[in-house]
Image 1 (tube, helix red, strand yellow):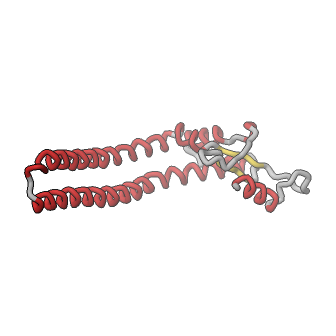
Image 2: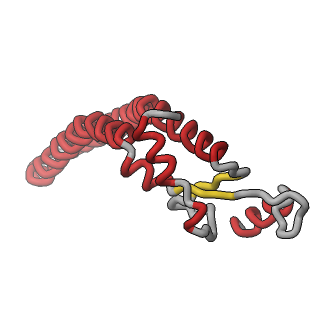
Length: 171
């Protein structure tokens, strides 16, 4: 499906060999940029620092719930039906609250991570645009995990030019 869409886009843009005006197409490997660009590495560290306390809290909640379940299972044989229902209800309430808290904190975390990453993405985009204009590329694709780019001649890989521009601090 992606190949068909890419082929249609290439045809629609007039990138068929033999057209009157040759188009220059390049690509970058964005995961490589994020691995080597210091600002991106710092953003990644900040995001991990934000995620660590959340994960620790979730682990503590899960352990607390597990302890209560084990205590219930040990005492269950000695409990009457009303006590069993109350204990079961209490455990279910704790599980629900933990899930709701986790979902709320994850949404907050995603928002904070987006705020951290947005400036880095903007810098990278500006650097890609600058390299593309300097090198007179008409289009620049991203070769990443989703493999939007099916094939790319490495002579048109702009990744290291973009990284160089980012590391020099010029966009």
